[in-house]
Length: 276
Length: 248
Image (tube, rainbow over the protein chains, first blue to last red):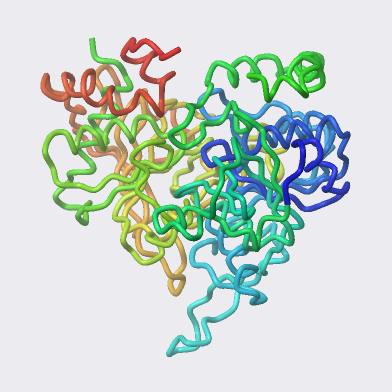
């Protein structure tokens, strides 16, 4: 179903929802994150798939987030995520650390509708020690009945949120090889997607497009947001805006700097996104 | 003038090609790893047949199933070598990428553990790197373990650290005794100086060789074609080390 704007998509997400998002190198919808800030979202639980970046930091800074589950939060070459670090230190957010393949595996279990899946590694890590929801059991297929292995529960986010290159007349979206977005969409109760444009036709009827598409079965709503991943890159369409992120990293070192950045880049520019 | 980053990249390249180590046919390089990326390109551009999967390169992404494909490949044992750093690294090669103080990094919070708690177990060898060689980074015992350096018998594990490369030296890791030994010293460094800058105890022979300088051919590659390959993913690094102008 097509919505008129990222703000209309954001209105679908209630406070407290579990929202899964890809990181800066894998098509985050920064447009939708900014719309959630404008809406005044509160108590969101963010899942970084498998890590978190710019969109997560601005949502935390704006007070939209109660909890983050992720394998890392970083602005890449621009350094540590400043609002995430400040909120953790001040006790304003709960952080549940994971490791990248554990997040993929929990989503894959949800995709399959099974209650858990096993994962190698992790034993002896303090990540595991701080995850009472993860269990270690003997591999039931091991000949000697030993071989400890970690079981991870299925995780079903309330919403998958990401950006795609385009949607078609049937409500399918296309984003090429960034298939972690497909995993998130498959595993979540609903997927809300911003796109650069809407085109005529049906990606699933075109053999060259189908493999990079996510079927309308999973796509609850989409809206046009031109340059909606910015400052992240969009496939081969536009590059990563390192200067924008570096400018943000400087501004967001302080609460006052972050507030000024929000006023300039989020609250004063809802219509500018489409005009750029 | 050889930049410290160039020396580290060349030292990493020599470790990749170490004939005593298991073969490196497919190497993966993770996030925030410009020196390992430079080392891998150096090895490849010197003509060694190696498959590189550079996770944060926008073009040339080898995976069509998303980033989980890296972990699936590694789970099967099809990634031969990976690189890990750490905010803290201790004498048993435990890695802390989470932060100092109480969990989850209430002292200084680092970005997080990324895939380390899986990759360190499932890759036949891991090369550790950290340019800053100081007692605050190289500690006796990490505050928090993202990924353990060794595992008890019975826990499935394909490999451990092969070595740790810093701005001062190269350490070799010995998983049988969970301890590092000094393999080579960078120019101007001494065993005593390294001991003073290292928070953990390590073994050292009476005579420790010098880390070889990168050759002229290696330096030419690093400053030319290696930088070309890296500029898109690591513009800040390429500008700082090699003076490569950043694209607007």
